[in-house]
Length: 114
Length: 111
Image 1 (cartoon, rainbow over the protein chains, first blue to last red):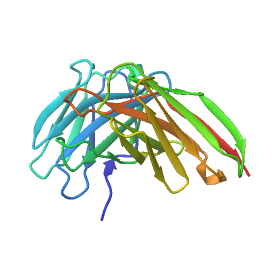
Image 2 (image 1 turned 180 degrees about the horizontal axis):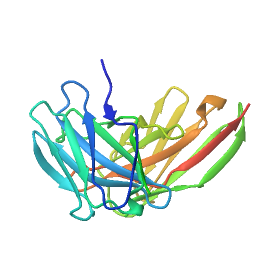
Image 3 (image 1 turned 180 degrees about the vertical axis):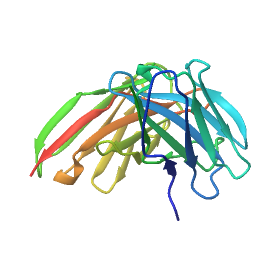
Image 4 (image 1 turned 120 degrees about the vertical axis):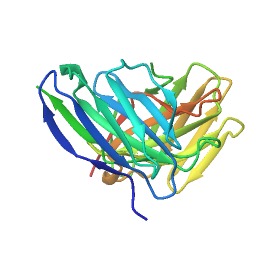
């Protein structure tokens, strides 16, 4: 069974640009969550999608957005990049959101903003 | 903001020794999970303990939960160099089922 796949793994952008990250969950998983990980703030929850609907959202500005497609694949977009957006962006999937269960994480997309 | 906070921030031990990490949290939880992260990689789920459970085992891992003290501990017995990683606790509370992660404990096991 394939794991969670995130692309790209590494990318470098400059301030003011925008970036789109992609996440393919484990087959059958309908929930996809996104986290931002930085040395200073640790793991911060961005948002969660379930069946193409945003179910929960963390405390991030509107520059951070996401969506989920009918095949459960998800994308997140960050517009007008700032230096502070440099981070490891982690995607995680799980089977359902009703019963608590483990999150399956991808390897992450490491974004560097210059 | 983090719900759980791990202690210590860093731990360095010799192979064969036991490693104990603690997690404290502030509000009532539904469950608590522990994850491991190797440097720069994704997180891997280790164990989940529900609020009505007090102890769980998985291989060399033992997790305890004390809801009266709002704390949990992760014990890794007979540590190996391959256990070198960061360990995070994640708590779920309320009805959102969104795990909130602490800042992690960095464990180094020297061969």
